[in-house]
Length: 263
Ligand code: MG
Ligand code: MG
Image 1 (cartoon, protein in one colour):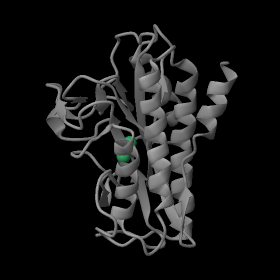
Image 2: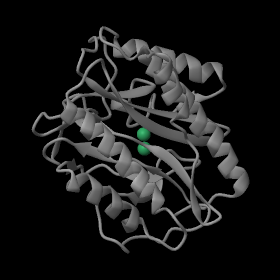
Image 3: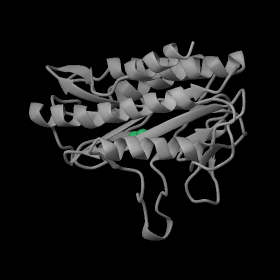
């Protein structure tokens, strides 16, 4: 069942989404060679709890293998769901940082891929194209379109640039639950799937690989990696349909300001 949100609910969801945006901006300032991902996770958890939020990923999943951290930190060939550890970041790495927050009973779920120091041009292109594909998908999020229009736009842009589009993991509805219907695949056909309607809120999240689209899961039961070991990028926004048009509830402005301040 797809839950449509009222304007009031969308405003509450914006608060949760922006708390994630601000958390990611704190991380943006700290991403550099030598930093331990676990330190980033502690900073994120502190900020969220200090501001009246609850980390949404910590404890998520089954009782015998609940996700142990506030952030999913996925480095290089890790696509998503990486567990923060104490292995320092290296110059030339890319890291996707995904964060979920519950605030006022609603969830925000939003991600960004950062470069650590200097990265190869082909990897920078992967990051740029993945982010572009997110915005092209969002453009399609208008009343009367269908989920497949979002999926198609993302897939076209990624594949036109020679990249692999992950099939097994998808975006999703968002609200009082972290994952709601409908699923939002990053591949598909125009005109397919559920119709987009006023009040829908979706987490759109392209996961794009430099090489093959195929993935594997590590024995930790969480981390997803590319089958060929090549890098993968991931961007995610929370988007509502308001007055028939897409309104992005999360924001990369805080991250961009933080990154600019480091230059
Ligand atoms: Mg996410
Ligand atoms: Mg998500």
